[in-house]
Length: 295
Image 1 (cartoon, rainbow, N blue to C red):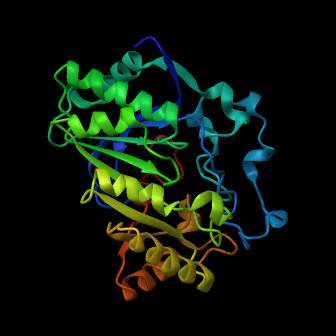
Image 2: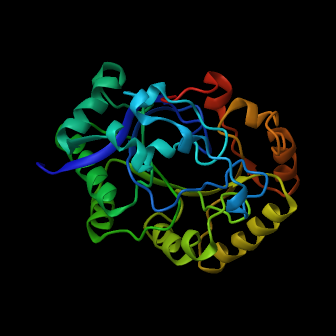
């Protein structure tokens, strides 16, 4: 395991979104993503000329740690995990070193039935990240660490490699869970042909028919709800039967409360999601720790 992999941060917190909300979780955030999601939080996500993007105005030389960066209310709230501007804050280490750092933050340096693992990004299913995560998990297995559940927080655009599929088919210890968050044109500003890949997601469902979720970030507009309904039909048509979660937009507590211009309050979006029969993924970590990176 001499190859080095790029990542942004390792931290220990709880899962704040979706099925495993509240579970103590070790996180590995990979560096690089194929999407940017600059439309998040914008008045009109479909009009890039109107975007407010605070991360572009930051002087990266003023920051030596990711933890010191602000949480951005507009655009991707983790732009530090893909923007070249923050490349100097990334780490490059072998899977063995990464795995040991993860163990260092887990209570008693031991995974047990209550400690989960989450690979996020960036995009954790880009080829380099797939290989890195498999190498990390293989290291845990070799050391007798039994991780009960591993989640990949993915945008659902990256095909799975043969190495990835083979590892997870043969792993006897760990539940594999895909948390898929397709990026909407009407919310994230990502064009359909780049961001929506139902056939790719069906590959995930072939590997894990029962353990996954489709999680749509929603700004509460009529256009967003219409797009979600259309996409649900598309994913269902290729055999993806994962439950649907709606996550109100807002990487900051102010955004969740609707205190930022153009944001519909999270509780209004949640009410509509429930009325449509969908589950609601509240950003619990945002409510508990407010605007803090690493939580």
